[in-house]
Image 1 (tube, rainbow, N blue to C red):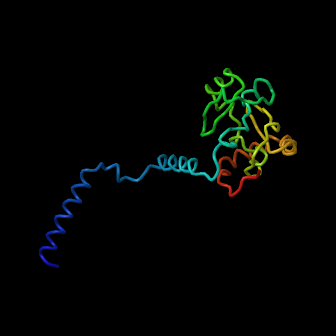
Image 2 (cartoon, one colour):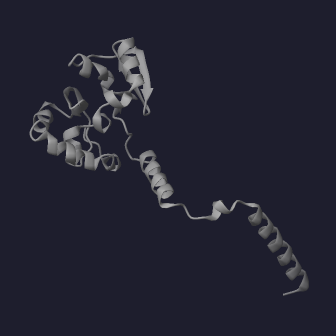
Image 3 (cartoon, rainbow, N blue to C red):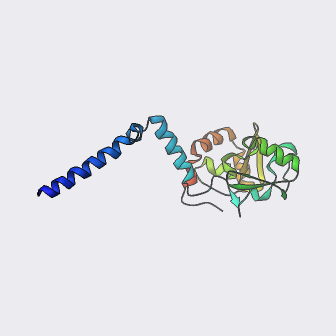
Length: 179
């Protein structure tokens, strides 16, 4: 190696060491297990094959008012006039009062498993739902794929909830969505 090459290498090394030395030491420390787990959870949630909430054209639950399932024990069509955005979806409500209840506590009124079929989730499958196949159980809203799926859901529901909870949200990465 020539003397000029060695001099250039020495200057470059000095510059690199200076830049690295001015950087925070924490930038080079490995992430703690808690930081690593948090980052992995965020990445898994953000990068799923299917959205966290089942929608048709960006509207959750086929436009049904989710609060009405709780307050009226009925399927009630929502209106674009009373819309609210939550979890990347547009939720429609039949009244300002229902929209405001939801906005104050969406976790209370939002359906389990993002509005995907609860019975299918118990089986490790991701499926769409219909507004008329529903149940409020222990203060939570569960929707199903069809009236037949709803009948099956009501047989040993407690064990199906345990299975669906274990499968959720991993099934958002399933290859297909049953329609």
